Amino acid sequence: MTASLKDLPQIEALLSQPSIADLSQAYSRAETAAALRDVIGGLRAALQSATPPAALPDFAGGDFAALVALQITAARAPSLRSVINATGVIIHTNLGRARMAPQAIAAMTGAGADATNLELDLETGKRGSRHAHVEGLIRDLTGAEAAVVVNNCAAAVLLSLMATASGRSVVASRGELVEIGGSFRLPDVIAQSGARLREVGTTNKTRVADYADAIDDTTAVLLKSHTSNFRIVGFTAAPDRQALARLASERRVILMEDLGSGVLVDLTRFGLSDEPVVSDVLKAGVDLVMFSGDKLLGGPQAGIIAGRREIVAELKAHPLMRALRIDKLSLAALEATLRLYRAPHDPLQEVPVLRMLSEPLEDVAGRAAALADRLAMVGVRDIKTEATSARVGGGTSPEQDLPSRALSIRLDGMSAEALAAALRRGPPPVIGRIAQDRVLLDMRSVQDDELPLIAEAFAAILRR
Ligand SMILES: *Cc1c(COP(=O)(O)O)cnc(C)c1O
Image (tube, rainbow, N blue to C red; front, side):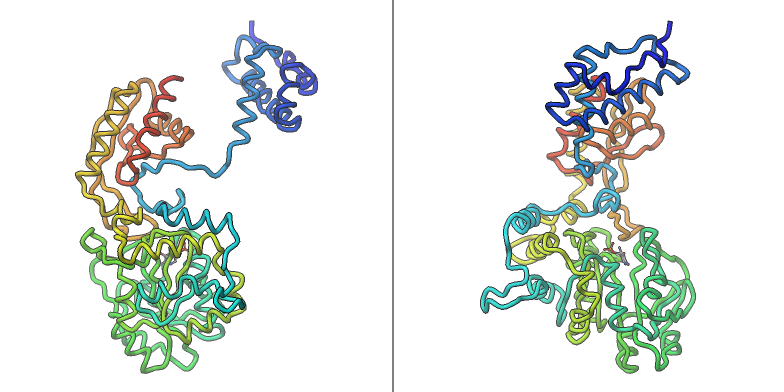
């Protein structure tokens, strides 16, 4: 005997039942009705499946009401949630990029809860500029004459080109016309800015002479771009910044560089030799640079523009500035993050992104061992420790592997895909990767305080 579709009750009838009416009281009628539709819909699908259930639940019973209550609370849970990044990709765009320092979080809390002097000069009582809160810090940290901050780096590039090259031409190397994350393609951004792209050189080689030959009286900008997420290796050439800067200044055009990640401290000793330090780029003579706030800088989403005073002044005055400006929460977090780059702070210890990428391998291995202990305690039996390569991510240094350790895990009677899916559902959601039919949890992108949560997630899966 199997149950049949006609045994499914009407939603209206269920709503007037005492145990369900109590839920309508406790939550709301609309949420209860929506939850009932979900639960009954699930039962209908099960009845129509190849393996229909033999019996339906007792719709008047407490178990059914509890199931509906669970559905209501699930629907009330926030959509945007904390997850555990065990992918080994430190700056993971799909997982929200940089995790911020406690100082940055505190600054956001304050700026969100309280009225602030966002655009008020407390000395004069007159209208102030939101840019003033970070401009001095950025100048100090980069050596730039001036700086301004917008919503993200894509906006920074767009605004910079609009303000300087609209209706004129922009010279860029064929080897640097990058696409970042699918929706940001440099040629398209140049077109959107109203400038005309003049491509020079070839995919693997571009010389100063190529730029020089392309400059004419319509040229406004020479644009260099960090090829963040790919490398052309082998027989390659790109002019050094000094040579391009000399050319730009001789021919009275602006040399701009989209740095993408943009680092404020030298990270070559951690293998990140492809990430130029912003102050070095400016010292080499680049007039204007743009970089992200939430990549290697380790702060909030933001686009920082730094460089020559008269160009930055034009950007600040541009009509589009208002549409692209940074919001107060991000501004508060950015200021707090930038302060961590100044004494007495040590950014390598205090900015989470930099701490994770500079963490000694022994410490990462220690975290793997600590997690293995905790997982064994909750009953996970098949655990191996593997040497892995973590990544910076965020389109930064694609070739650079950071030595890391991962736990490689299998649960009896569960495929790696099923385990990864169960971990992703949480709580809390734990995001790993699959290799050789096992789930890998990389410990370089995880923090110590997350280990008990990962163990709890496994315990919940094993209880099912
Ligand atoms: C990441 C990146 C961008 C876009 O930065 P967002 O802050 O995500 O807008 C632009 N250019 C380069 C070279 C990048 O690496």
